[in-house]
Each structure stands twice: as C-alpha cells, then as structure tokens.
Image (tube, rainbow, N blue to C red; front, side):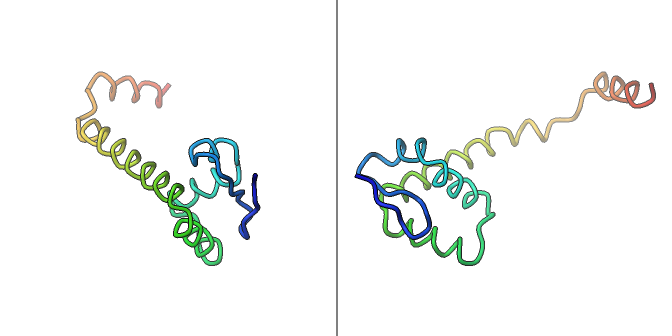
Length: 96
C-alpha cells in the first residue's frame, strides 16, 4: 500500500532503501537535501518528512556518513604534488 505525502514523495511499508530506488522523486529530494540544494518550503517539507519517517532518517544519515567517508578517503590524494612529468605533458597539450 502506498500513500502520497504532501511533498509528492510516496510513503509505503516497504524498506526505505527499496523505496528510494523505486521513487525517483524521493531519491532526487534526498540528493538535493544532502547537496544543500533545498531551500524554503522544499527544505521544510523534507525535514518534516525526515522527522516523521525514522527509516528514511536512518537512510539519509547513512548516506551522509558514506559521503563524509568518501571525502575523507580521497583527501590525502589531493594533498599530493602533481608529478613533473604530468605537468610537462599538460603544458605540451596546452601549447600544441
């Protein structure tokens, strides 16, 4: 059984992960929320949905945790200097 919430995201008894995969609107809202792209009424509605749906709240928290881990994982690579050979190759591409 599926009900339509006020913000257009479907609500059902199935596990949240499966619901996110099947509901493009919900997946899009989660992505926009995690990327800081929701504002105003959209943000308020999504945050209300999170407060009222414990499974969705856990799913979003898990996604946020994974995002932080991925950011941390690649941070040390960004601190490494670019090898001279690569810089020289890039210079040749730009000039040629």
